[in-house]
Length: 410
Ligand code: ASP
Ligand code: MG
Image (tube, rainbow, N blue to C red; front, top):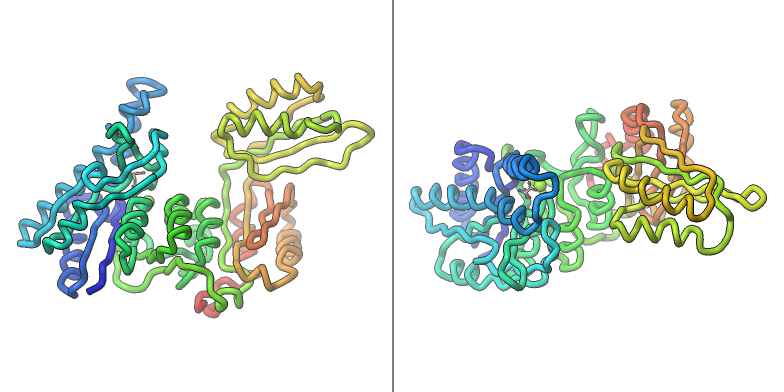
């Protein structure tokens, strides 16, 4: 008998009808003779609604109270689902994060899991029951409720699959897998059958919002294979798993865009030791995630340093950077907001050369100017004008033949 962890996202359980549809799916899997642990998100939009209410009350709500509030969305869906299954004569039982024993650190709203006891889940399983677990929540050492960051139900599912040594962790969502590009922008994007953890991490951090980034990191660390599937349609999904040799045959697995970026340039910085350390030290201390950094070759004794950050963090970053800039006698701080990042991702880049130059040439043929470039072993990213992002995505998708079947048969 296999043990499956099945997680259903917010749209999958977004209404009473959807809860019935998911109950059908759970019932079918159970009847196939598998042991099942179900993890649920809150109904779609619910966590946002709770957040809005909290913000109406005060602009920076107390985080302990916020976590208690946000965790309530998942209690609604697990209890409704358990009722639905029980009304059908299926032995199901709901469990909150506390009841499961998901213990986290004290970082409210983005807590890290330190251990998963899962005693009651195990007991329910040996009782022949189906545990229905609230995603996204845990407790700290004081038993206060914590949440695991937005999209954190994915992490609950992966962590439970690891703790229970489940045979499979299936994440059901409203799309049928991970695509070679965003199908809303690139109509001939194709579903990938398999993808490595590393590729998924790059794509997730680039805004392919299929899986929470931290859940993929956790899965990679504990070697939990994740299957991403649709709860709305039958059929295969995408398997996210450890890298294997076949994956390298394809140079590029996917192309992703991110338009939530901004570029900051500190102009006329003295070119002397310690300056970059001071600048980025203060930005890092504020928890701001700097992505690309470019320092120009200095003209005489002055240089320019440019870097990109998430656009939402621009006001806070500018505050800090302006202070440092005046302290180090930099000439000016300039900002460019209408930029976007386009990236190619693929483990095959390790063994294929010329990917970056082919990317630059394809962009230049479309008259798209490259503002910044960065590369890693499995990724090439270019910052471009935001207005060209969709064109760039379609151009690169075509250039690397991601629409062709062979690329998905990895
Ligand atoms: N309900 C939470 C959120 O909206 C967690 C999740 O859905 O995974 O972020
Ligand atoms: Mg999600």
